[in-house]
Image 1 (tube, rainbow, N blue to C red):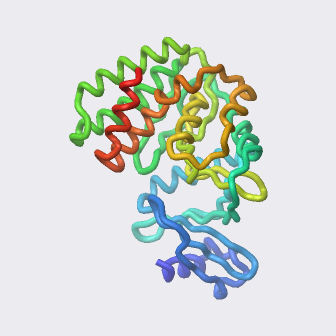
Image 2: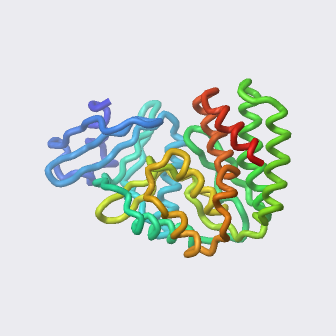
Image 3: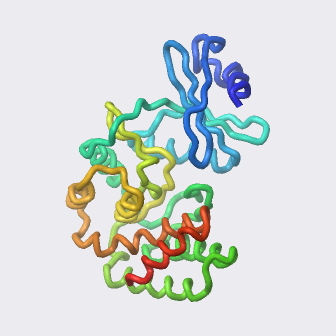
Length: 284
């Protein structure tokens, strides 16, 4: 892989990325769903993410640019190249540090200031490797059921992971809770959609967001995702909620919001996450 990246650095498309391409060094950096490599010389460091699907890479590039246009902190994108059967997303290296609560709140307030008249998004996208449709809806309950919950519970049923009883129970819970909590009365705002700590980069320059799964929805969706696996500063949700005009009672609703990310994990990682999904729907 390192030799392929060297070849791409020498290409015309990346001719302005490094002043002396022959002096750069390429090394493996990290691995999540896809491998990431660090490219560096004596002046500059660049990250390249190697993605198996060009569509997924194009959506990620689009989403980061969308956030950048909204003045939300994201790594600068340099180029997206397709070579053979893989896509290479070249972007700014962020010298990471601990996530500071003040910086996190500042970045997310800018995110949540972006409003829309309807729930949804202007194009389909992904969460992890799972596709998400994003038609626009007047009501949150219709958007979240038809575009989020129903597709993933149906996929899990098709793969033998869940059954139709789960579908019927989840549908009843979703619409009942949405009505009881008045979720359809919320104004849609831009949310990250996959806000776990691995997608939030702390730095001396503030907090940067990566790997977004964008939609216009309700910020509590992000709050609940952030609490699934930890890694965030204590008390940040309680501080940001009144600043963006959210009602009290999030703790009562948290498990409701965590149903969708649990469905994501059931579909990507399998049976080990079924109990987490079931525990949450049993609470309502």
